[in-house]
Image 1 (cartoon, rainbow, N blue to C red):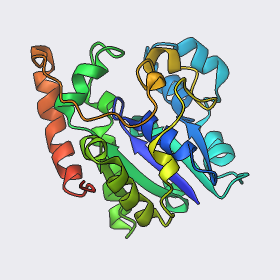
Image 2: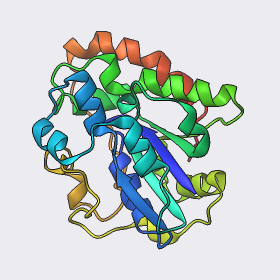
Image 3: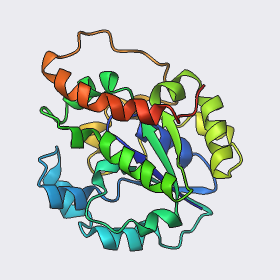
Amino acid sequence: MKINLWSGPRNVSTALMYAFAQRGDTRVTDEPLYAHYLHLTGAQHPGRKEILAAMDSNGERVVRDVLLAAQDRPVLFVKNMAHHFLCLSWDFLGKMTNVMLIRDPEQMLPSLINQVPKPQLADTALARQTEIFDYLKARGRSPCVLDAKELLLNPEHVLRQLCTHVGLEFDAAMLSWPAGGRPEDGIWAPHWYHVIRTTTGFGPYRPKTSPFPAFLRPLLEECRPHYAYLYEHALKC
C-alpha cells in the first residue's frame, strides 16, 4: 500500500509522518518533490541550495523511482506538500491511496511567515488541495481529509478513523515517538522542524492568541473558501 499525504505547510504533517514511522509495517518518505518544486518555481525557501544539491529535481523521475517504486515494507507513507505537485502527470494519483491534511488558515498563516515572509495563496497549498480533491472525487476516489485541529484534539480517535479508511489496522505505537527527529527527515529540517523534534507525541491543541497580522488579511480571505470546502469532508474527533 502506498499512502500519499497531500498537506500544506505548518499543518502538523511532520507529526503525522512520525506517527506512521512508528509502525513496523511502514516506511516513510519526507517531501520527495521539494527539489522539483524549488527548481520549477525558483522559490527562495530556507535551505534552497542544499535541497537542490541533495535531491532529485526531476519530478517525473521522483514519481517513478520513489512514489511508485517497489518497497521493502508493506506500507509506504509519503509526506508531500500539495503545492509541490506542479507540471506532472496526474495518472499516478490513481495508483496511490491519497489523504489530505488541512489546517485553519487563521492558525496556519502566522506560522508560515516565519519561513515564507510574504506568502501567496499558492504557498498555502489550499487551492492545490482543492484541485486534487476534486480530481479524485470526480473519479470515485475521494481522499480521506484530516484537519490539524481535529487530529490534535483526539489523536487516537482520528488516527483510528484514518486507518480504517485506508484499510490498515490501527497501531497504538502511532501515538508516540522518540524526541530528536528521524533519519528520514528532509535536509530542510533545521529550518522547519525546531518544535516537532522536541516532541514525543501529538501535543494538545493550543489556538494562537496573538493578534492576527493585518497584512495577511487579504490572503486569509482567499484561503477561507478552500479550507471551508475541504473541512466539510474532514474526519471529526
